Image (cartoon, rainbow, N blue to C red; front, side, top):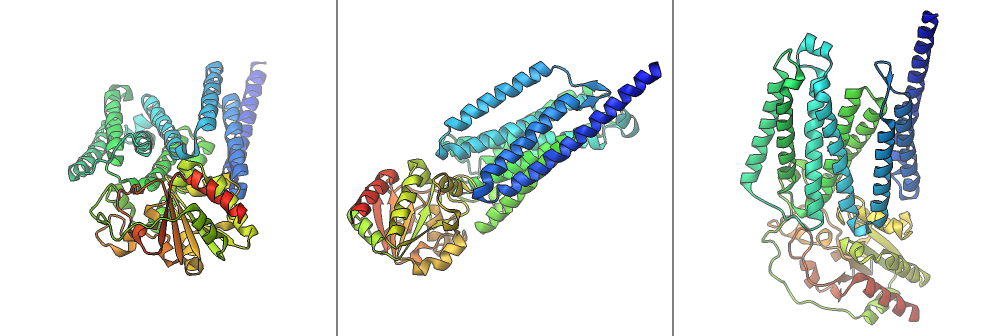
Length: 484
């Protein structure tokens, strides 16, 4: 009878384990399909839903079917309470956040992922497999995975919080050669501490826990100082890079728990973030090394002297010029997001198209404060994806454009990137609005962009400035165009 009961338990365990593996496979497929759908605005919402569904079934499957040494997961009440609390908080935050604060939200959530990965490593270090320690000491794959997860997760968390502060305007850049030397020293210390712990031989991991907390502290400090010197114009790249760090840290947790869905999710996030980082660096004609050492943005002598005089344009003249053009190109920037004027921009382009004017949008890869910021903003206003041109494609059409309307963009249209070798943004590809016949720039004032340098485009003979809140200006132009 005992053998029958034991056999029955074995069958139940094996069956549950097989079902869990199938659930993980389905969840992984949903992650991959969801990521694929995120590549196009028309399917991005479905992609989010599919990926979220994959995560939900993976979590539920793990809680109900996972076994550790033949035992089910305990404390389910506390776990579900924590999940519910996190869900409610996340829902409230996501619903209340403004589009202009979306980059900060992405940084914050990304930092939470890094913190979770780091905490997993801290909690699991004392529980390294005793058989591995007996055979290899602490110089084994499990210890290595724990330390990688700890360091990368900590750097991602601390760096993301600093990025959050910079995007919110509460933390300023600290640009110093001394800081770069300190960062190198901290990195070497991190490697040295890991090497010291892993070469202690066959010892009880609990006796080395103080060193793990030291490693955690140093990694957090390094994460802060890692992002501090990076200039404002590079923040979209930094966000993407930190996102890839969080993915790699999560993948370490997948290795640690032999959890395929956690591993798959981490690899997808890590690889996607890395690819996006490389693409953005290429779009800015920058190496990742130059981004990391913080040699971009945050000031510079270039373009500090005003050249020429400012020429303004009235609402009426701007409306007439736009209405009687054949082709108009809109270049959106962070100012459009701040003013929440994307819906009015789309209303204007529909009015112009009714008058026979061709309207398109030139999207620079780093316009805004995070990768794809302008795409998300305009998709929210239901601007057709076909109207959105990447900067290279838009530049190819610019000579045939009658009027370029720059709404809140600055650095991404700054000719200093092509004309002034002393400029901090020299070499960065820009939207070449100077090729167009006429330029209208909508700005609140003559403030500098995120790279904190002067923009001589504003003094060009082709340029006319339309000062004021973008939303108010567009509303007046819409009203005027309707009356023509």
